[in-house]
Image (cartoon, rainbow, N blue to C red; front, side, top):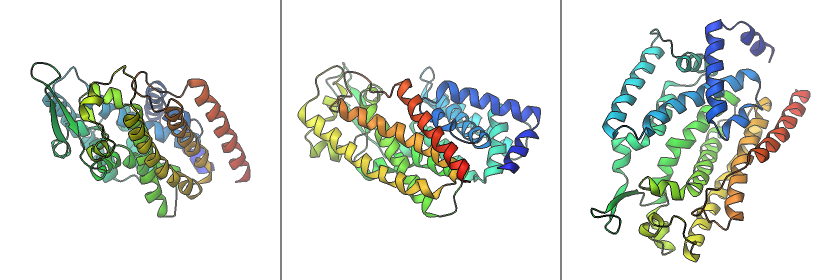
Length: 325
């Protein structure tokens, strides 16, 4: 801890500004993650903000619907090339790159993990990844119909969840600190739990974007069609739909068990942050259940006051853990 504090004191003004810029991006955009960052020691919180800001940049490029898919791919390729140049030691004035390069060096985050991180945020632009989704055309939606991308099996969905969420977990535990290699498996599964929770919350919004992330094999098991999910906005949830979403929530809860195994394996000064993050996401899943899985009429959220209360409990855990160190 002393060495980390000394390193913070000796940061260059440029590096301090870079981390401050990343922290502002995280404060403004990270609806759930930022509360967990606040429960970390400053050097680890800064590192998490750098990773988040990097992900946010990639995500914003990938999701900019003001541009065509081809234009987004070109913008992502240009940004990735600039990042590769910075990694190779080339000059950069990008504060996110400056902060992440320092984070990568200090916490031993591999180039491969960061490449996977970018790939995960840009899944909708990845031709190889989207090729694994089946395209379903619904004739009832407009004169020419409308196309929806769907995953056929949970194994297909798992691969998607791994890239967009588990890789984030594998990066995070390198910042949190761990020595037991089992932490990587548990971090992967915790990421799956988080993403399944997001998918449940966002069924309506994803359908509006032409994406159905609930696997077709599960839809068929509960006699739910892609068309009824696509056309469901504002309608009363049916029994079959509720049973489908309850099944997926149970699957998410199974994966959340990995977080309980992960918690004691990471460094003591990071456990409170992981606890805050898991508790916020589990609370979101609880809220979905409390709403009888009706994610169609309104977006289910964890309120700011609840997040602050979870953070305060997490901070108390952090204080007690540091006293024991």
